[in-house]
Amino acid sequence: MKLMRDNVLLEKEERKRKSNIIIVEDQEEGKWETFIGNVKEIGPGRVSPDGKRIEMEIKKGDKVLYKQYAGHKLGNNHWIINRKDILAVLD
Image (cartoon, rainbow, N blue to C red; front, top):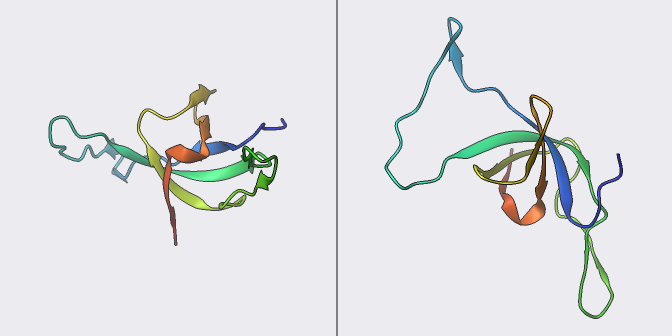
């Protein structure tokens, strides 16, 4: 698969588990949830209005925090999202 522009292929990490029970964290009403994913593939980056390529700030193998309603689901655990929906690279 060859991704276009500033799109990213992520593998979503599973939720925290304890004895095969998924733990659901409480959340304030109206707040969006975030997810953690592992970057599997990245596009070449976007092109600025003056025609210069803007390189991606992330790389394959990065662990990232991304928005709940980002992107398009592929299969069970993979998503294609736009770079702008990634909030942080985790250490």
